Length: 282
Image (cartoon, rainbow, N blue to C red; front, side, top):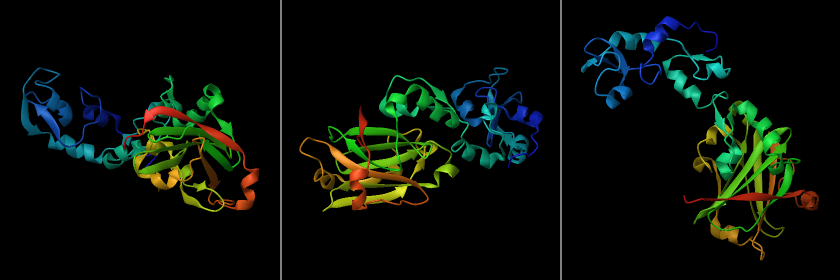
């Protein structure tokens, strides 16, 4: 809805005096006619403007005006120029690439990194600050999970096709769960798929899935609903005597070219994933 005219005077009237967010139905009032959003009203005993009592009355007129208003993105100052009606503004926030995001290495591995920035800045930050933790690879490689045990979470950031991805994996009591996260906008991520193969030439488990945008999983260490799941007992069959698990991974745009082809095995580069002391408990 970019380009729609914004009535800034109306939006000023819709701004809650406490949380400074734009109010939506139901908009509550005090005895002197001052407005407040319903969530802030529940936390206060008197009007923040005049100390008057709240009354059980809604400002229907302002609610109706708010329902027809055009709103800017909350991340406007960061560069987002999108505009929305009242229904679209909150939905957009979950996918806005201008929202402030924590460093994914810090979020997932609990490193001491306080950096936060927009999605478009994450790749540059990883290259500049965490370059020792990232490897540039072709789209097809082998990943070794060292000291493989239940509950441990593994992470491997990789640069493939000029794009930043994170392999995340771990085991709970029932499943080995893994996902490949693309640090990019959702419309860009839709073009990427990944495959994971665990086993040997005689017996293996192989699953292909789509990659997910970092915006989809920003609040989770390992995204519950976006994981590939393999039975833990089956995975144990492929853990080596030295206690590591080897995975073959391919990440590609649109399609996977060499996934599970045996003749490619000896030519694949091998990397070892770092692991976190954060425990996977679900």
